[in-house]
Image (cartoon, rainbow, N blue to C red; front, side, top):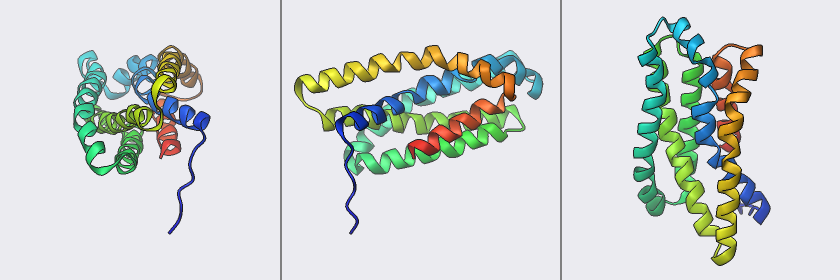
Amino acid sequence: MVRQKKLSMSAMVVFITFMNAFIPLSTDLYLPALPEMGKYFGASEFLVGLTLTVFFFVFAVSIVLFGPLSDKYGRKPVLIFGAAIYTISSVVCALAFDIYILIAGRFFQALGSGAVITVATALIKDCFRGSIMSKILAITQALGVIAPMAAPIIGGILLTFTNWRGAFYLLTFLGAVNL
């Protein structure tokens, strides 16, 4: 039997903060590319905007779904499932040749994100107690504010080197790192 290595407190905080960044990165990184995506797919603004709306809706529902599942089956299986779904669906988004495939990819990307974020929040409760828990929660939430500010800038920079698919390739890489 292989013993699992335990992370130090600071490594755990970094890991939880990284997981908390999934949502803003997933929603804001590709925003600068929306007009380019509309042209590429020949899709209306409504359909391109639906990629964002579907993500938010499925993410909200998945948090409610994965909270009890992570309590029942454990954090690790739910985290692995969520990160795997997120990573695979990010590849689907990057390779999408049709707006409807992109919307479906975003659906499953949001499902995976919900699992990851649910576990990230639960880990704070599981790993820390008392005032330390409050401090860690404050730190991760404060650092999580940086991602929505940085993501569109990073997305814009990516567009100078690649097309809209670059954002989803980056999200694929981040999902694989989390996995």
